[in-house]
Structures are given as C-alpha cells and as structure tokens.
Length: 438
Image 1 (cartoon, one colour):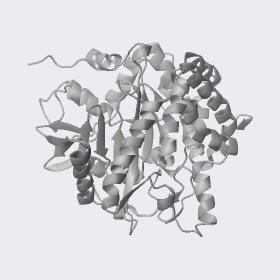
Image 2 (cartoon, rainbow, N blue to C red):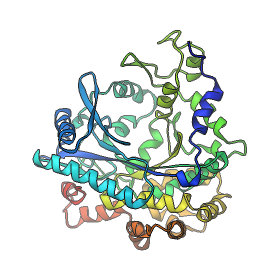
Image 3 (cartoon, rainbow, N blue to C red):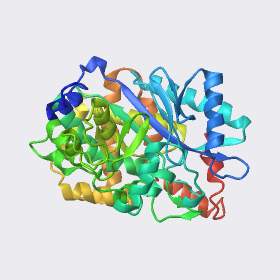
Image 4 (tube, helix red, strand yellow):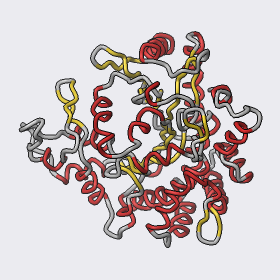
C-alpha cells in the first residue's frame, strides 16, 4: 500500500509547476459550437463522432474512448475534447511563442473545417449559443457530465446553461516561484473583467438580444458559487499555495473515477476522502490523479493548477483566439509590465473587483470605474501589454491588432453584433452563423 496523501503532498503537486523563466510556455484552450449548415441546428453526438473519426484518420490523431464512445483525440501535447453540449475544444500544447500558438489554432481550424465541410457542418466562434434552447442541445456520452448535470440545478440557476450553451477561450501561463504565482494570480484576477469586456461576444439567446454583452460571463455568477468567482482570499497577505489547497479541499466534490467508472460524490468533502471516509467509496483513498481531477472541477475567474488559467473571455473568431494569449503574455510574462499592473491594481478593493465582475458583462468597456471607465483602464493595460511583447523580442505585437481595434473604437465585439442585428440582419440572429463561422 502506498502512504495516504497528506496536505503537504497536495501542496507539492502545485509547487511542482514552478519553472525558470526560460521554460515558461503558453497554452491556449478554445471551444466552439458545431452546427448543421443547412438547419443551423446543433450537431448531435453521432455527427461529432464522425468528425472525430475523420480527424483521426486524416490527420493522425489518437482516439480517446469511454464506454465504446470516441469522446476525444490526442496528438503529442494537444488534445481535442467535448464539452457537455458537444462544444468542440482544442487544448493546445505548451508553446514558446505566440507565432506557434496562432499556427496551432490555424492548423486545428483548417483540419476541423476540412472534415466538417464535407458533412455539411460548420463551427461558430461565439460565447453563448445564439439561437437554440437548452432542450435543443444534445448531451454528450461522458460520465462526469451526467453527474454534473444532475447536481447543477441544486447549487445555482444557470449551471446547465454554462454546461450546454457557453464557449470560452482561455490562456494557461507558468510561474517561477510561489511569489511569482501570487503576483500573477492577483494581476490576473484584477484584470479578468477587463479581458471579459474586450472579448465580450455573447449578446444573443434563443434568437434575440439577451440584455448582456457577455452572457457567458454573467452565467458564472449563478452557476455554483462554492467553486467560482473572484477569490478575494488571493489578495490576503497570507495567500500562497497552502491557502489555495485549503480552498480547494473545501470545494465540494463532483466525482471519483474508479475502474473506468465515475462515482457520484457530489457535495462530498475531499477532506473526508483524504481519511477514507467518502460514503460512496468507503475505504478508498485519493491519489494525486484524484486531486488533479478535483482541481479541474473548480471554476474561478483565474484557476491555479501547475500553471495559472485565465478564464474570463468569450469564444470568438480565429483572430481573437490569437489575440487573447498575446494580451496576457505581454502583461504577465514581462517583469516591467507585471510590476506596473501590480502597482496599478494594488489599491483596488474587493468591492471594486466584485463590482467590475458583476457590471462588465452588462456594460462592457462603458462600465464606470473610479473617475473614468473600463475603456480607460483597457487603453492603459493594452499599452503595457504591447510594451511587454516588444521587450520579449519575438515580434508578437501584431497579434494585439484585434484588441487595439476594439479599445480604440470603444465598441466590443458583442456591440458590433447587436448593431448588425438591428440593421443589416433585420433583427434575425441567423446571419451570425455565417458572420462568425470559422
């Protein structure tokens, strides 16, 4: 028997993510909605299975199978997975430069398009399903989603929308030490609402404007507050790896995976699991794999694993998929920019950060903050990001063009779509499927 895991082991797992600056990498993850080009309907599992098989055959991916269903693909350090409603997600490899990141995105979209087009299937880059109701969305055959689907309505009113009708793009970044992790975590949390504003791209629901610029972001405010939000404790002087472990231990569990089956442990405590007292799996003790799984069931605006995940942006078209990592790399991978951000946000209060978190999904760049607006903050932050990318020396600044256009015009992607809806599209959301088609 191996020794039972201790809290120190759980901390050591996170600490093992620390790496010297020359080994820092950039990881991106992006989700998109598949739809039938003729009917605009969401694609069902059998269509998705055919796409996965097509990608595997044509582009040499390895299949990931659960209970005889193909549920994903792997190739080197990249993987393709399915979100609960069939949203197609690429989890990219850890890459050195934004040129590589953007090339990876392009290659993935090319492959998906090549296979999908022959089947009459398109992919849409947007943050919330614009047309179809929850009941229209197919359910993917993955054990962990079954458990989540039953649990979500018990802990919030919007969890099923989160699972089945949202798409996000996120960026994963490294840290060198506990102190570096803390600075990046704080900067990431403080600025997450600014990124939400710049990339806001989910203004429609069931064929009409939904009252938000980023409905996807708003949905997280009532999905499950035990496991989401702005984590005010990260700004406490006592914050470090240990404090995050304490937080994660208190986030109620979803499941334990044993003998190729997911066991429903919703609402249970990982602390009980540590001492073999899970009612659903008496005597079972957690492995580091269980801990790793548990950490992926926590959904704050910035999430700590062995790297930090920036989780505040809506899904969008490919140019924006390259822009989001550029935005964060320029801010967090450059010492001077990171210091400027730390100075700029050091006197923001929990109340102010929470206010931004709540209001930005509605008013975007026009959200008032202190004696100006979020747009003013965004201008300043964009400059810091550009400077940071310049100093990195890889000629990556051009990836910020898309962000530049949004901030200088003051018009978020969502407002642009709403304007098209009222004018050229004559109050129909159907053209968005063409407008934001990959």
